[in-house]
Length: 184
Image (cartoon, rainbow, N blue to C red; front, top):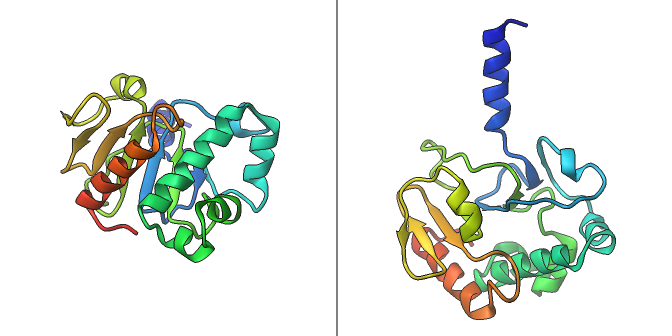
């Protein structure tokens, strides 16, 4: 392969969505880290979770990942997300549908790529420190916890942890998403 071909392939791979979830997602949450288990540290594509895989991650990693998945599911409940409504509770959705094939959400470990041609997705960067490391469009900070760029459909929020993204802040995040678009 030529140098130009390798460079083009590298650039394409650098912009590839890497993480967990469904390719037809409307909602993307970006994290700076990934589970240190199985093939997740070297994952280089988008992978829907299989039934029971979330429980496997939680059982074989730190309590951190249980919190991440719980907070993600609680946020989707606050958003009146279609899958949570159908499942009956955020706990049932977490265990039976979160980030699986057919879901409408992603948990991405790759850097965000804002595609101006895709105006249906909402991008959420989890963590102010992580957001500061990224090349993001200009943000308007609403307070110490949340920033937004409406044109890019981008929100920066606290990390997916009970202390940082409390129930009150989960509701605030859901309201910000609703302001951008009714995705539920």
